[in-house]
Structures are given as C-alpha cells and as structure tokens.
Image (cartoon, rainbow, N blue to C red; front, side, top):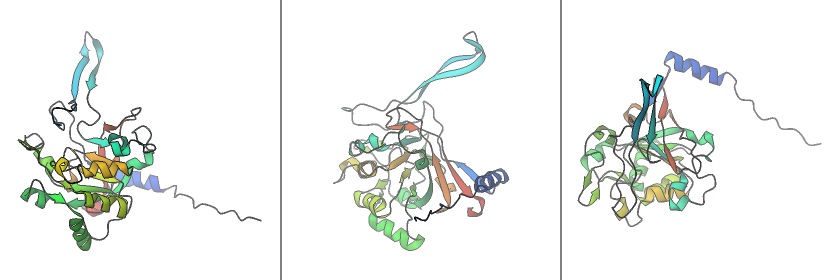
Length: 272
C-alpha cells in the first residue's frame, strides 16, 4: 500500500496579514518607476541599426466635441521605452528559450525578492565603472552571500540624472554608464542563480559594453539563461540591501520581447 504524502497547506492568513501590514504602513510600497513621457530618453544605437521609438501620446477626447464625457489618449512606443522589462527573447541568445516572450513568462516570475548592491560611490568617481566578479566577491565578504532566485539591483544613483543629457551620457565614442562584465554576469547567473538584473541606467549593460572582449554580456548571458532585465529604475536608494520584494509585471503582449511597466517594491518598515 502506497502512503499518501500530504503537501503542507499554505497559511490562509498570510495574504490577509500582508494586506493589513500594507494598510498600517508596516509594509511600505516604493515606486521604482520613472514617469513615462515623450521627454524620457531612449537608448540610441549606431545609425546603421533600427532605433527605439520614444513614447508618444495623442489626445482623442477630453470632455469636448470628440467625447463630451470622457478623456482618453492614443499612445505609441517601443517595447523598451521608459522603465521597462527585457524578456529572454529580446536577445539572440534567448530566442529559443521556452516561454521567452512576455506573454509566456510564468506570472510568478514577476514577483521576487531583491538584493541591492550599492555602486553609487564607484559610479560617481568613474562613469564607466565596471562591476567585476572580484567586486561582487568582496561585496559578499562584507554583506553575506547572494541568495538564489533574487533580483540583483545595482544602485548607481544614475536615476538622479534623468532630465539631463548626462542620463544617456552620449559622447563622440558612444554612451558612458556603469555596468557588469561577463565574469560578473556568469557569477550572478550560474553560481548565484539570480532571477535577473535591475538597473537605473537605460540598459543592463555598461555604456561601452559593445567594445568589451565579450560584448554586451548582461544581455547575452542573462537572456541566454532565460533570465530577465529591468531598466530605467528609480528610488533604489529607498530599498534595504535585503528584505524587499520587487513586483514587475510587463504588459501581456503577444510574442513581445519586452514591455514598459510600473515597477514597485514592497519594503518592511522595520528595514528603514
């Protein structure tokens, strides 16, 4: 006779308790999303490639002759405009990943805890600062081992440049912004099993990453392993090193490679 193994039942009060803590302020909601407007810059590629279209909005009616009781707009944009999500299918290394488009990703993968790695001092001193494996190992020695299935959020304070030319930071030789090298990405993906990389810059790769010996390693390694990217975040300085949960739900675009989204973080007040 085969014994029946009962799965442990979920605590039915856990969600109610979370809602109560949100209402009481014991859990804070931090908005990690920049305002999406036609003024928000998009990544600029070399001129021989197709370009990312900026956000556009056109009023259809606003309590007028085109619609006396309603206000609405037509909008258009690239999938990778503003604060946005990169799915595995965004990159050639992820084109054959199962469930690699935004409509096919399991929705539970949009909710994961985060580890925040502060590189703001390094980025302030060197706009081309590169996150290496040695840097991450030194960080772990001071802050503890990076746990699996977490977003790795690089706090660079780059979002403070939004509204200025120094956000894209384009110069004669291209963009300049911080980011990881290939060894760092292999470490995070293969040895620490991260869910993805979350950054304040316009892309998960460093501005000069196309010139690396292994070009654009964040995109190549993340998406080739079925992991995700979050770009153009803000307010990462309001998150603790550990203890927050990032909720990042892209639009369910059929076959989509990415999507603008509203990213929030849930933070225990005790972590302040």
